[in-house]
Each structure stands twice: as structure tokens, then as C-alpha cells.
Length: 472
Image (tube, rainbow, N blue to C red):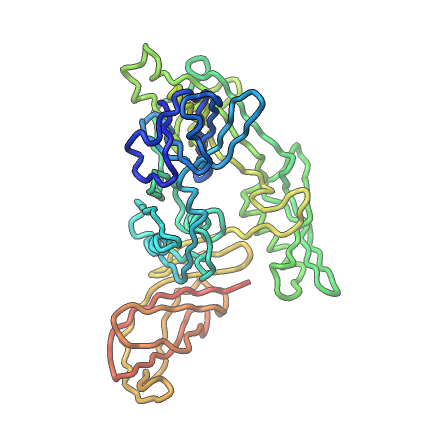
């Protein structure tokens, strides 16, 4: 298609805008699964409507073979001596990086999206998910103002980290789907439609073992070398130091250091190289012989397809994690399959130049009754759940605003979630009543307790939502 240029204030993208960019030399859209979504195009200085191309304006073009047009904000340009100007644009959804939201006690995906809709300045984006009733405490919503883009993903405890899924960016609509793509029943085969194949595997930044240590003011505790189960590279172990100082408030024992280090290694699922597979191929549906079967040969980002390349004993199903689409030729020119980044060092958050402890990862998660829990590799345990009680604020008490419950109200936490008494408890109540919760705390690994106060004598059913944390 021929791209269309729009003013920066355009919202509908249904007209020819400021005009067509008919002299474009190249227009390429690159999109990654839950990652970048950008457009690069080149245009001659003497080309039609060149003078109208300004930074901040919008180029709209197709991004795949569905004829769906998407808008991209033009943010930079390079003007070389040959008179061919290169422009770089990002999808309009990137505007959410300049919108700020904040919130607390976010316990569901719908609550999270409601928080984003209230971002400042006024947020024109709408949010959708097919994950009906998705729940879970969003840790990053701690009251700190952050950009909407940060809340969507990229930081620990974000929407993507909490509720999982695959994003789809469609103009002013952001969709978090349980699975964006579909399972395609066709195979890219060497000797049939495959034109290029490149598999990269790089062990230069991968490690199989760590030596943990904790450094205090006057003493340093060094643990034993810990190795990921079954991990080796050419029969040898490769080791890096692992700083666990900020994972313990007090001096740990050697056994505690070893245990923590082994947890990190196990969470990375043994030694992994940095590996990616890039495949170029002719889509048979675009050729004359297969035009009647074109729908059978379509595929796009997040779809799962088969690859058969006997030379490298490569056969199996892979998810498309990156696409490069030529807008002028109206076809994909490149697709990348599999994980974009799977090195052990990246999974652990360490590298050749850094010996800080890796970022914490979830080792176990599940549900027990009305409660959901997650156990992190740094020893943190968090859980959230609901419970309903009949509450009678009928005992006169000036200290509690007039009336209070005759004794503490207690709520049960399923056993097996916490190993000790949680040290951080949050609670909010639902329902139309005047009760005020006071002195909420954990009295053990399986029980919460607190009082209710009220200005008037009242008996009512109160449903509580709890978020409980036990730090390492």
C-alpha cells in the first residue's frame, strides 16, 4: 500500500489525511511479541509531499497481510548527503509512556485497566482482555506514579508479569490476550518454500554455576559453588560470583547462602544459550500456483507454525516472535521464531561485568481455597484472598468511634502458604456499611485478626479482600 501522512492530532485515520507518500522508497514495519512496534521509511527530498513530513506527525500503513492500517508517530530522521532521508516512527501506543497513573490494592485485571484509564493527561486508549475474571495482586501498584507503559509491562509486578498473555496494539485499543496467535497447520520446508535459515546460539554470556557471598561491615560469608542441575558446556562448569548481600537483612549462614543460590539456578531451568532462529521463506499463497489456497498459507505474529530443516535436524513447532513487513511489497520479508532472549545470565540478571544478585523470579504459584499465592526465589511469599464474616459492632466504645466488635474478628489463611508469621498485611472491605477496620495484623502463619469500629450500632456481613506478605 501507499502510506498516508496525518497531522499529529488525527484520531480516526479514515481519510487521506495530509496526503499519500507515493514516492516512498522503502517502508518497513517491525513488531515483536510483547515488544517493539516500529516503522522505518526512507523518502527522497524532492518526493511528493516531502515538505509535509514533520517530526511529530503520523504515518499510517499496513503492518501485515490483513490490510489493517496502523498509525506510527514520526520521532526522528537522518538526512545524509545523497538526498534520501531516513525516518523512524513508533506505534501510537508508545504515547502511553508519557501518561502517568498510580494506584494501590489492584487485585484484578479489570481494576488495573480502570487505573490506566484514569491516567493523566487524559488517556484516549481503551483496554480489553479475553481473560474473564483474571485476578491477582499487582505488586507494582504501590501508590508510586509510573508511566502507563511501565504498568503494562517491562517491570516486575506489572500487568504482563502478573496476568500473563500477549499484547495486541490496535490504534487506540490495547488488548491483553491469553494467546494472540493461532496454531497454523502448515510447515515451512527446506527445498519447498524456505529461502534462508539462520540459527544463532551463543554461550559467551551463559553460566552453569555460581559462588554466592554476603558482605557485611566487618565480615564476609562465602558459600559453596552451586551448579544448575544437569548444566554443563562441553563437559566443563563455568562459574561467576553471585552477590546476595541485599537478599538477607542479617548475616546468613553458609547453608542459607547455598540454598538461596541454588534457588536462583533452579529457577533458570539449567544452562541455556542465547538462541534464536530466523527464517525467510516464500509464502506459497502469494504465488500463482497456490493463490486459491492463500488462506492456508497465512501466518502472523504469535502464530505457531512448523519448521522442517533436515540438514540441522530441526523439526518442530515454533511461535513467531518477530515479524518484518514490507509495506510497499505487501508481504513479510522476515520472521523470527522461538525465544528472543534465553541466556542463563539474562534469566539471572548477571553478566561478565556485574556480580549483583539476579532479579527475583517466581518459583511456585497456585491457589488454595479462596486464596492465591506466589513464592519468590528471594524468599518472599505473597498471597491474596477474600473472606466474608457477619460482623456485629454493638459494644459501646469511644475509642472506636462509638461502637466496636465485642472481640477480635479472625480470618483463616490456608495452611502451607506461609512458613512463618507474615509481616505485612493489607485489607480492604467491600459492601455498603460504615464499619472501619482497625488493628489488622497476622497472628500466625494461618490467621489474621482485627477489630471493626462503627459510629452506630450495626450488624452486617462484611467481605474482606486481603493481601499478605512474608518477606525473606
